[in-house]
Length: 376
Image (cartoon, rainbow, N blue to C red; front, top):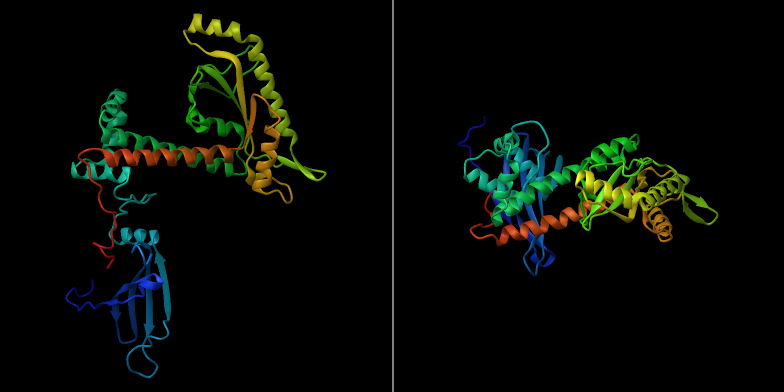
């Protein structure tokens, strides 16, 4: 360790607020016979409102002057910098927040997740232990119900659900973008996560063989009790679209999948009334099988092998194809998962607003607020 009684030189450099630079602070890291090291933290923002929009942390090394006195400050021998979120990561690393190897997430103070962690820390409760304790209980639903009975508890519950769903979406995106993923792997990962398809669905039907001849991949239950059949195909479809004369058209695999979905719907139309009565009388389950709809989930733009095919042209081609269909829609994995991500972002904003309005809760400052805790 270095001598802790050594002088520490810190200086402030004025900025030019008219140009958006608010000034900087510097610190002397080393002053040796051959080398001089320093760090500088600069801030930039709106000169009118005073809002800080960028922070830059820069490190420079200067060699001793070739004339034998002082240092060559005009020519740094090495220099590197980091900014904004990169500074937060470096600060967390230097403060030894990463005690175990693995993946971490920086939590902003005042956010739903940040407030939950703050509550746990002030209560002396370990978050990991709390999670394990809940997982071992047989009445988790009762505990969750109790938490959701208060505004803060409801926000905490929503935050946990949103975080878990983000992991599901991230995993599915990784699978869909991988070249070798097939429909079986996608179906297993989607599982019972019906929320991926939107807010009008309430679950997945317990039986997948709704008709005598067919087995459906994901029979979604709509809020009105009707069915929406999802037919899954793999994300790796190189001929999702192809060029035909002067225009783009969907590939044969799309036509076949849509034909398959249309046959499922025809079978439900023909057998639906009898099956509906059977499910209700024998199993006590009510499904409205009249005029069901279907979605064909197929392909990903990243895997399309067609010269000049862009994301925009692929989307336009599928949208044109869908405009001539009734009761069946074609959807790519990219569209589905991006839509799910947008929905989660919207729900996260609502949860944070609810937490901010909860009585007895105040927002903490950011985890690394340089106004109060400079990084040096």
